[in-house]
Length: 204
Image (tube, rainbow, N blue to C red):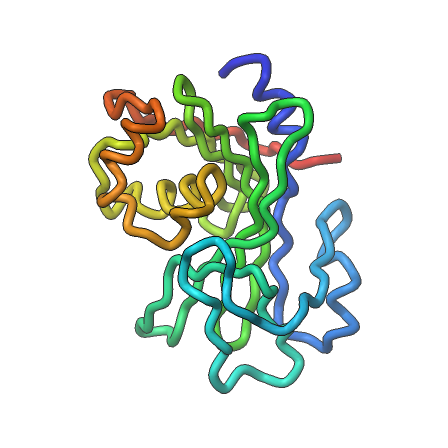
């Protein structure tokens, strides 16, 4: 891992699992050191070119509405009901121009989980750093990616989030269709994808 990733890791906001509760409670952190979630504005179509954020059907009245710039990447119904994952709140890193932060919005009918990923858009070291719900408590996962390479069920979401952060005009598109665009943008498509788990990497 390069020295520059020390800065990126320090910028990562570790997620707080937001259980269903009254709106005013969303101003309070779930646990010491965990970020609080703010109630965003009502939804409107995203300007980033992805799918507009749909309204939440039959959501309880105290569930906060989706943010206006939310782009839905996953919308499916399983044995546990409906699940949506979207991204919003893209922000640059002033000290590392190729690094962006992007918020994840994971929602079921009665639960909401908000976290922040750090994405490196460099052609030489494209990467997703995540501490989202799939990472487990107290862990960060560093995923080196290969934009323009093979897309599988195992890496599809990583690439969807990476494209939404690095090239928001392609947010919501199937990354398997973006191989030619990745090469046009300077990505070789031949990098090796690998994961690195950093245990206990919570901000103080």
